[in-house]
Length: 523
Ligand SMILES: *[C@@H]1O[C@H](CO)[C@@H](O)[C@H](O)[C@H]1NC(C)=O
Ligand SMILES: *[C@@H]1O[C@H](CO)[C@@H](O)[C@H](O)[C@H]1NC(C)=O
Ligand SMILES: *[C@@H]1O[C@H](CO)[C@@H](O)[C@H](O)[C@H]1NC(C)=O
Ligand SMILES: *[C@@H]1O[C@H](CO)[C@@H](O)[C@H](O)[C@H]1NC(C)=O
Ligand SMILES: *[C@@H]1O[C@H](CO)[C@@H](O)[C@H](O)[C@H]1NC(C)=O
Ligand SMILES: *[C@@H]1O[C@H](CO)[C@@H](O)[C@H](O)[C@H]1NC(C)=O
Image (cartoon, rainbow, N blue to C red; front, top):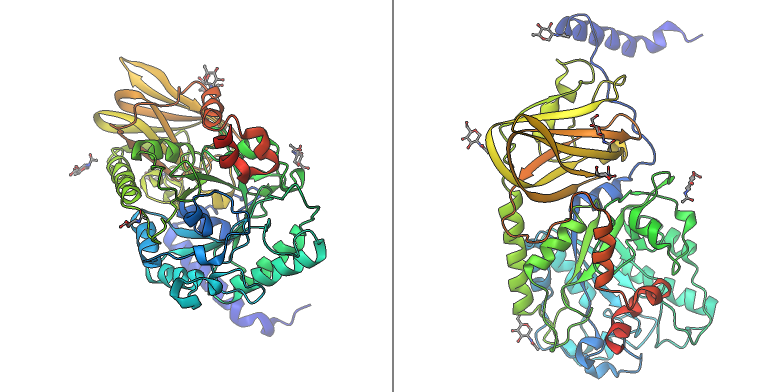
């Protein structure tokens, strides 16, 4: 038995609180939030997802030799950017709405953009800044200055270092370099790696060991690979996710370098791990800068945005600095236009003044914490929750007047788990409900495009859910720019589009995804 005096202070306090709550709420306590449904995102995964977009910077000797993969034999003297300015890179990222920059600290050629103690094949042997430069340090300082995060890509494949080919020696070398990157440059938010290997050498990468060490050194880091552990590759280099896209995934079902296309693209509704996907794509044809190549248009980027961020993923857009060490004017122009398009479409939610009701409210109609009107508050911290006992879930919006729109944005509070399996969107037109879009997963953010409709009344029906569905945001928008939109009743569209830009390289890339560009251009 606990002696009564030992719990006296807290006991008295809770009694007082109880009385206080009882007085202010009448007779009942508020209903607590529903149980989260596992698996759930970690703090780092939540922060990463809220960032929505990252800027990838492929830069190195390849930039100067007009190649995509260096042989590993380019002399360090080729690396001589005349006016490298990492502040321009970070400023561009911050102004364009990118939450972080990820730099190729070492690509397959093995050349290090920081003065690694373990090799001479680095900036230290180059003429740039008379051998005293450090691109990683300059970018780390610039990222801090502009308030964005920093990530690094450290290629496992190394075509230069003699230890490559000897498993123990090379794993030691790799971890030595990784430790330099994760201990000398402050906060590193992402480590990006692939499973690329040279065909000429037998090598094993000790991924499990690498991942543990990376997490030890940077507890808030996100590790990207084919199989997570923190974020998974979407499975193409077109920046396109499946229209069904779960953050749920079985990590154990994938080995790095051998993905299953379906499960990478769509995730797994029965998955036991939270491993959201990252969509990588380059603004240009190649990953490195080539004077002969030109950026995609802002409209193409907008389309990719719908198919990545708009499908519960993070978009990592590669914008390669040129051989002067600067992001080219034409890329800057496209990024400005891309921002302007997104601002025009998404800064104005025409549902802002809507009257929102729902099939039921958790805790009763007077419970404001789960009220349907919460879906008009930005972000995912507040949400609508239905009564636990109901299963005909729907949210109704009365827009107050006839409004034309062709885009719907929906968000789930993923901190409570990803729930919705199937939904449809109806509008009231000439006295009848008409379905204008349907789909599967929502996740952090889902953007739906459909032909322009006009209505005052709209309903969002949830047909299937892993548990009581929770909705944190609904946005209604007009996009006057997109000329293509997914047929709302077709899921086939997605894979076709994704493939068309990368058909030739797809199967080869399953083994070695970063071989894509060179092979594509060789055929
Ligand atoms: C993922 O793991 C769960 C739990 O073990 C299992 O039910 C599910 O079938 C797995 N998914 C796949 C695609 O193997
Ligand atoms: C690189 O981009 C900058 C603009 O930021 C431009 O002034 C410079 O001429 C470009 N360099 C090359 C080699 O194209
Ligand atoms: C919402 O209502 C306010 C005040 O009635 C009005 O000024 C504003 O334009 C309305 N916004 C929208 C998106 O309809
Ligand atoms: C909700 O509040 C209204 C007005 O304050 C009250 O009349 C009604 O009885 C309340 N309903 C419930 C279920 O408590
Ligand atoms: C969407 O509706 C079409 C036509 O009714 C149907 O064939 C399809 O299965 C639905 N898709 C989803 C994901 O509910
Ligand atoms: C979704 O639910 C609505 C309303 O109950 C129903 O009319 C519609 O047929 C359902 N859709 C599917 C694909 O089951």
